Length: 289
Length: 302
Image (cartoon, rainbow over all chains, first blue to last red; front, side, top):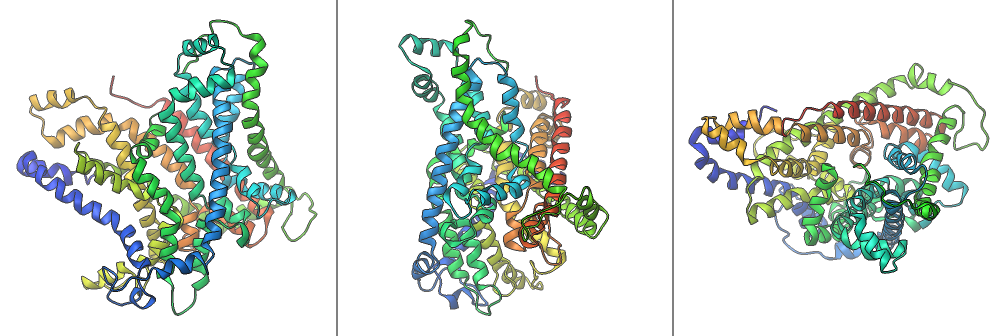
């Protein structure tokens, strides 16, 4: 914790004027360093095998080789992995949002016996990660013949305690008078959720759902265990596999691996660039509660 | 947090309301609570993937893990996990704070830079890990090239015990530092300007202002980062799996990797389950302990 003076000494030396000049320069340098791995991935993905392995690396490809991408999509089967990832993520998203919003309504606005006790069941689940339960889960899925299936990929992630928790807090902050007004207009419970609660918590709903999407898309641990076979392999696992294919060989294929890395992150990064405001507050929002 | 007082009793709707939480609860019971019970059961058996039937063996697995043949791997993985956690905490809190001070200017260009610094958090760990694999490559990696440029000896980052964990931490650091920064920046935005004005009137230097005002007022944020980062860092798996597979000679074998190896490589479900139960207990103890601490946490702001 004693490195802060980097900032403060700027002020101490020449007052805040020096810092006002130094700060942007330093900030740009740090940003460039932080972006470099991403830049390096993109650049390498367009290089030829020979150029990727020059002892003096080139900062920019001498010739472009988009066929690296074609190879990864075709021969390395990334098209298939894309499909698998899309279906898995869509399934997780649909189920987590569905069960999450319904349960959040029940816990926030419902009146039934044992409501808070049951909510503790939800909170307790936050403390039991997949890294603990994956062995019995794997057995369970094997017994139900769910290995290498979409259901096997999706079901253990079908409900998110975090999602329920966030949406319940948001719904609770909405005044009951809105719900009563809706009732007068003849809204049932589902109508209340759809026409009153969800529109009124749009921002949180959107943010938390984006987090759910990226978590699903980027998930690795469970898919690696349950879908070892190529038929249901997802992108993250396929990418790691791509590395293993060439391990131990004299010629490495990092130009192709980097193309795979770009393909894996592309949808999420595009989402991030469009919705960065939401996606950056998504984490701080969950942090501040 | 306290629920609003229910104005009208809605007895007949109770069952209807209950139905809304049933799907979520059913799934949680089936895919979270049932497995954790089953896990405890397996830990008392001699079950492995190769045979169908099993017998109960009491605390045999426990013994093996703690004092028998598995003890040295267990303590090793606890040590590695702890070191890793310390590293991730340092990057998130110290690094995040430094970045927050550096990027804490409210202008459009700084906003853009903040987004870029935060972006690695959204780069899938798989991609991030293979990028670092490539950058840290011994012969063709750009990091070693830069080292050679300034006349240092290239480092065999991932294949020697002394630098393997450090390499994993570099990858982690790249992904989490922007997160620490964002949390601190949004907390800093909540500190009233009055404190600083009053302090300047009293002639406090900027470093005094930082250590006497900013840092103490951010202590709840720091505590929050400490607790959540510590818990999530315990669960590290993917970076290790892709970068080093626990090696070289178990120098990066974190706890989850140990469980994973027992289960999916050695097919010793019994031992893996025992280790997983222990892991769960550790997580639980940390959670309860930190909840106690957060309840007594000191806040200086009104």
